[in-house]
Image (cartoon, rainbow, N blue to C red; front, side):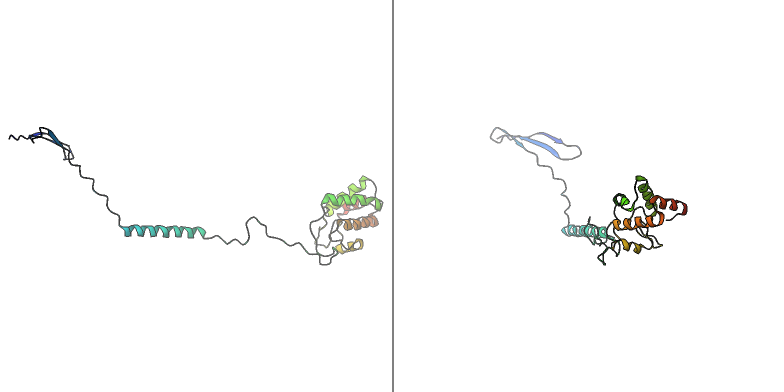
Length: 210
């Protein structure tokens, strides 16, 4: 029996030093050729294993950092004392006397509305014509700007600036808050003292008061 072994070839991979392939032929009795596959190259070095204790420490540290940041972000913020967007309610002055003679109540009568009241009252005091109304507008524009609640440190009050304001009680008990009562008293005062609104305006221009 003849045994022959011939090394068919070998290849060396440069830089790796690993044998690429071997082929063997011989008389094994089967008259064939057997090819042996090369062994698989060694796997890369296994990745280093992570210490579970180290991972747990890192996790705890991250949690502490997040808690610390959350705490700092809340510093300096005062607690909300009332719902956002809702104004603080205010209490309107009470009318203790029940007749308008106490503290001013509500908003003053709008200027245009007060002037309309005066214009309608003029004929009842004998003041006719737009000229008299024009003089009255100028006079009370300067005195109070037609503000029902206009108050002067000297004690003058209301649209006609009665001094003291309590004088207007002769025209009505609601003198402090009623434009109608104040205008009624003021027109009577002008008629008694200056005859007409234009007479009162003329005196104001020369003296600075009426």
